[in-house]
Length: 69
Image (cartoon, rainbow, N blue to C red; front, side, top):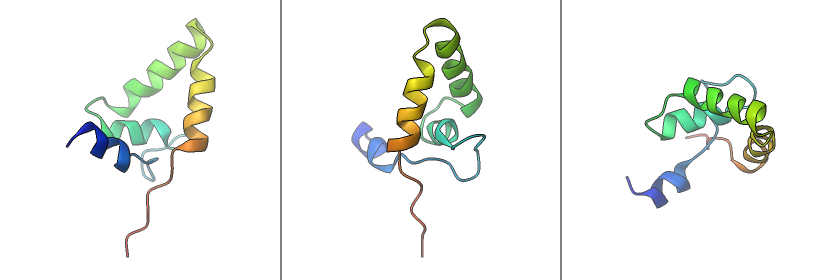
């Protein structure tokens, strides 16, 4: 799958979600597991203070999965 195809199909996860499904969606669409994404966002919050802003922006702008049917 090309990077453009990955980005076009990127959506929040409906099954692997703790807060909004952003990290679960990243885990489903990349080779990196969702727990690693959660850890990275947590470390970015603790070390740089930017992880929360990035997560909230992804929460707002990343769409939910389209319902098939």
